[in-house]
Image 1 (cartoon, rainbow, N blue to C red):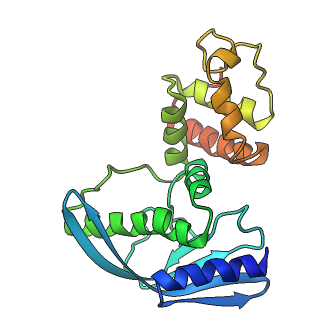
Image 2: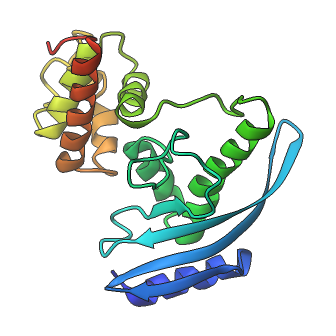
Length: 223
């Protein structure tokens, strides 16, 4: 991690959110404090504040920050992992979003605030979600990929992730989506694009999550 980069990015954050404080600890950095923001959906504006912690791992910005809500407002049942960190979305979706604004300020504005706003809206609007509810955990990852690849078969999702996990996609071979077109004439350009955001090891992780979800729920089969 580049300490000067972190400090420069934090100064940008502080201009927008002055109550967030940067704290170095054990070769990592934490940003803690009250995040105040305004957000609007369909004409309904919300002014909110949450006590949060953002942890930067030593591999930042290659790895995304970890976010926790420290004020006890967000229950464990609302899109949170077992360690208390917030589930902001499917990992690949987060990496794609972060790539468009790869700074701490961009991360807060594009990923953290939408999550916190969604929770606030959910609590004040009879448990409705402003953007529609996204699934959580392994189910959320599986549903994300199924929609991304636009395939009907659950097994096809696993097949595509298996190929991506082991770099076994070749443009002249049939596309693993089952279309009977060659990969280069079907999903090939998408697969090349996805490798810009995560590598084989991350796809292996997602494959394992999806496989465990499918196996536990009796859906699909590996083709």
